[in-house]
Image (cartoon, rainbow, N blue to C red; front, side, top):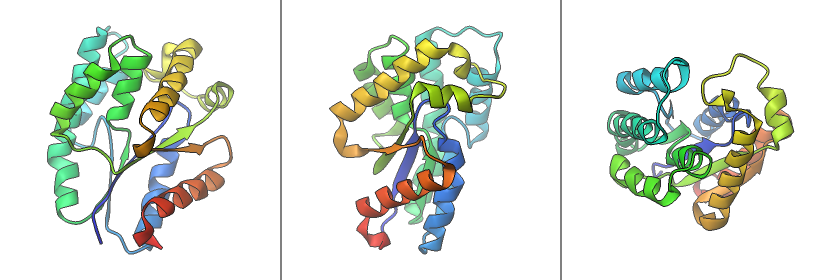
Length: 207
């Protein structure tokens, strides 16, 4: 079967991280070899950058510096994890990818989304997911689920999350071919089923 690259995305509290393992297990049950990863992270460089971006509350990064750090981690992720897995014929399921940069630092953060898209093309060597699954939730659901210690991005508040959701929906409107929207407000099992249905309808070879 053909190797595929899928990313899951959404605002903070959408529940995407809870769905990665479920999706990978389901794909393995369909006979696929699966590599999972997170962006930023999943490499020594990526994990070090992730700590700077999300855990170092004492560091105040300019939006452009923040964007380039994400790109550096992503370039390493592509080189060390994603491309090798695809070359082996595996499916890759990533917790976030370039779309998150476009929305977080672009639509919500004030940078030009198209400029970020261009930098992203260079950082990834043009490697884009075959499908982005956007798990969409309202702001009330997001806030309710973020009942835990927050990282630096999650701690930017409700107005930032409002801009995030609007940015994601703007990207769906502008690039509908590569993004599938799944309602993430239901329970974990129901959302997992919706994601599976979406992926199965996109990739008929899984039938």
